[in-house]
Image (tube, rainbow, N blue to C red; front, side, top):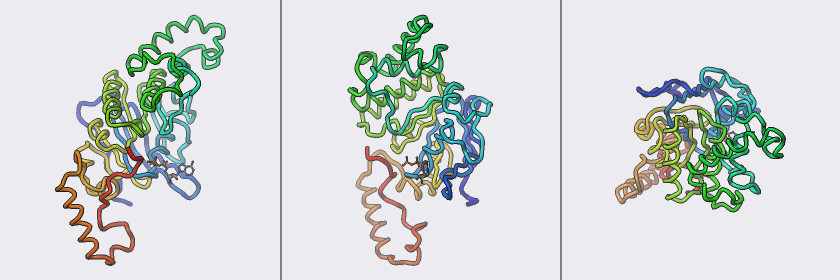
Length: 313
Ligand SMILES: Nc1ncnc2c1ncn2[C@@H]1O[C@H](COP(=O)(O)OP(=O)(O)OP(=O)(O)O)[C@@H](O)[C@H]1O
């Protein structure tokens, strides 16, 4: 697999490293889900992580956030190696959202954000939930900050609604607001637009830009390639646990290995008649040749024409 990785790309003009993952490998028994991955996120950057289902993206996130202890490698935040404990990672300055929404369904929108603040208040989670001694003092300040975050994410009018009653897109926004409540320097988003309609996706794109503009670096996993390529300064593509390519949106979209392993066809706005004709011609060509000698392994040969795998949008 010597051809698999490329050098880390650091675009000119970006800041200092916020996150540095060095040689991260994660094995589950005989399965290597993440293999020797090197990734840096600099301040001021939005970095995308793409790849087929099962490529190891979420496992890599779990290694970054202390949920998993990597079999090999280290993860540093602002130059310091992180402990393998998720609450300490949050305290250090990394916040995340999950692929499957994890809100407190029976708490209000505001309460969910307040809970997200517990790593930044002296009183801690239990005091916040039980309104114990010392909480009152911090309460007004915390609530003001939580309301700021609800304004920022467009949820202020819903502050007293139960989280479970929010429409799906707003639940995803609330997850982001709650993550921001820990005042992170780096935000990890795991498929933030999964299940969203195009308007919600567009709004999420704007929200992520606004988060970056507040000085928070962002690392985002997403299967929606339009979203990724519009948003990201840099994109890394994982395939079978390894970093295949890393670079600007243009570089990654144009890389034939990424196209073959994941994208299928070069990414464009919408498949037009020209692309459809191309696809049909390729299919006809493939049929003419089958069953040829390269059709046995599936490792090479025809490029997938179905586009990126992933959750339907
Ligand atoms: N806790 C675990 N125990 C064993 N195997 C696991 C575990 N978590 C993930 N895997 C395996 O590791 C590989 C990578 O999975 P992972 O969920 O990280 O991929 P992914 O790129 O996030 O996929 P998707 O895009 O579908 O979310 C898969 O083969 C998966 O089955």
